[in-house]
Amino acid sequence: MLPSSRGTLYPKRLPDLYRLEPPPGARALVRWFWISSWNLSDGSVSRQQLIAFPALNLVVESTMVGLSGPTTRTSHRDLSGNGWVVGALLRPAAVPAFTDDPASLRDEYVALAEPELHARVGESFGDPPSELGRRAASEVLADWLIARVGDPTPDALQANRMAELAEADPVLLRVGELAERLGTSERTLQRLASRYVGLGPAALIRRRRLQEAAERIRADPDADLASLAAELGYTDQAHLTNEFTRVLGLSPAGYRKDAVG
Image 1 (cartoon, rainbow, N blue to C red):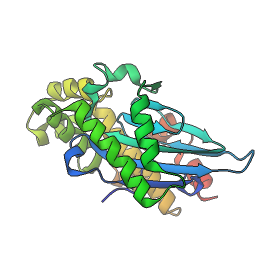
Image 2 (cartoon, rainbow, N blue to C red):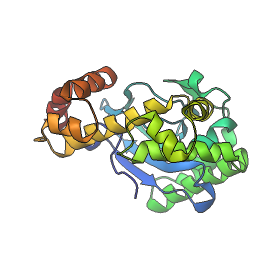
Image 3 (tube, one colour):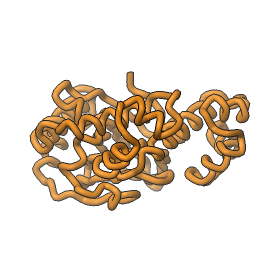
């Protein structure tokens, strides 16, 4: 099941956002496709604010094709006028087809010269957008990725597994535990993360905890922060507050007030 709002800090403020499973042939390359379109009145602005998944995104939007690198902090984009975007949250196995050094793309969004891909996705998406068009556009992007990346290597698949566990398993709190679960060494995990992610394995675990903390605070405004910190494996509430504030720029209590208000 796809997480409907995890990673999105203020989902109620966004235009329509859809997350679609990739077709079978692309599942080793794409975590999911995320698709949005908007048509805002003159002067209106919709700000997307994210604590993104620790991964690269291939993005085809109405005006360009871009590659978004892994983030170390919250990010945002202001939408205005009308437009659309079809994005692919890439699994680590797809990354070497775009860069040998994903760390160089941290907090960056770079344009890709792919006019044919842009035209094909746009034609499939259609106007006005529909469920059929969204699925067709994601399938075009999936086919393009499969052709570009080819068959993942064993190392690439191991990197996928590393990211999956770090993202989803709440029991894993330390890199050593992640290495033990994968039957490998911490040094190997560091190498895989450097080659296929651009962030260290500890950062993958920290991002999952922060995303979950934000989602829990948003879903349950009355949640006790000390209890939440303990459930998510933080040393104490101060530890949660410091990490939350460092990455998001506001405290858990401040986020709760902002998200609910």
